[in-house]
Image (tube, rainbow, N blue to C red; front, side, top):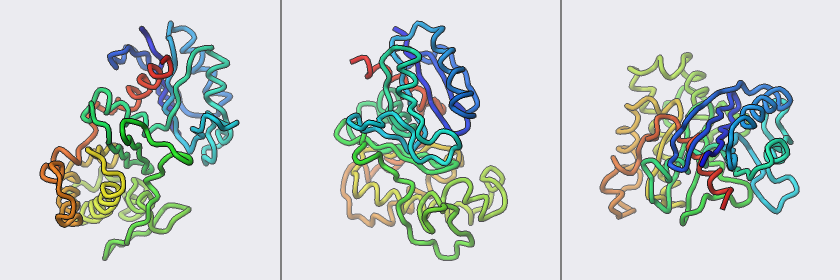
Length: 289
């Protein structure tokens, strides 16, 4: 059985054909321009494939409330031309097949829970730290949506003492995204993360912000595993620093097996950066049920 997968990002659209084992059989990419330019190319691609359903893991914010008249729409995105675009309705009209739909980060989490390092877990958190910060949450075996969907990148954080930077978020002066995403690193230090590998002071501040956020997520959501992906987390030196600071912040309050094995609790993404498109395959599979 073949399934279509679309990982819809603000910069590029990744399209793939996969099977029920999560295997990616082929993959193409299109630049994210306007809906009028980009989406016909995507639909033409999928029309040539014998797919049973399409899963869309989409940048947001998006409307995930199935009872809503605007279900399937991209809402208040700053991406020009996309605000108000109903990507689900457009896909149904063009392809005439079931459509699975969720956030891009929930897609990444779904990929990890189905085929990756969180396989079989009922409760997990996937956090991406790159151009922005977003998170997907699985609770009691279900992806968390609620009023909209979790926006974990915008929790407020105390400023790290001696931090020479300031928030780059236009909405909040001290949120995780504003203080720890890739653009904040560049604004603070003048160059991108990959040029700062040997600057310990950079990662001391970065790991403090991430560990502080993770403590809040651990206390509130109680995930059984926390997975960190995105471009910033390619800096692998961050992981031991985050774990050490996380342990210090928790200060023995949570007593579980996970807290005794932080190397297996706070972990990097495990699917070679394909977790999002693999999650979109699972969304397509679920849409057929």
